[in-house]
Image (cartoon, rainbow, N blue to C red; front, side):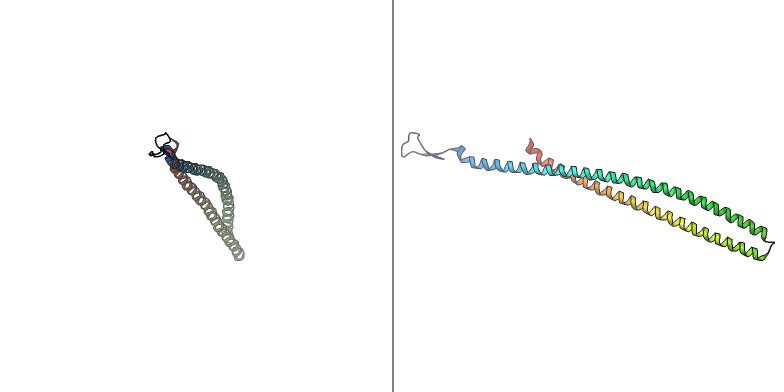
Length: 185
């Protein structure tokens, strides 16, 4: 504010400027901008912390899903082992039957041609059944293997995505913290 000079209230004195009053609006504006900037940075930090919490929750959920998938994989592996054992038993049984038929054929060679033809037909049927069984077992094993590989690919993909998201979030938080550090000192 401008005050008449001389302090005595005379009419023709010099005018003087109060330095505090002249700078007060600029200081108030600077204070308002700093307060606004600090509040915006605090909001951004809170949002980043919320994002980190959300990412941690998602990571925990992915961990649970991974545990469930591992359990499913273990179950599939147990089922595959049981199936392999069953196939081995059936294969052994079929081998015994085939050997018995071969023995029967060898002992009946001196016999009638009709019984030889019947035994050969039975052997062919068992061999076809055996080949069908081996083919089915191979397809089943390949199918299970493809399923396991698919589950593992999915798990690895989810893991990579979560690691990328976590790295991005950490980088963002570190940047915000670096920006806020000078204001907090």
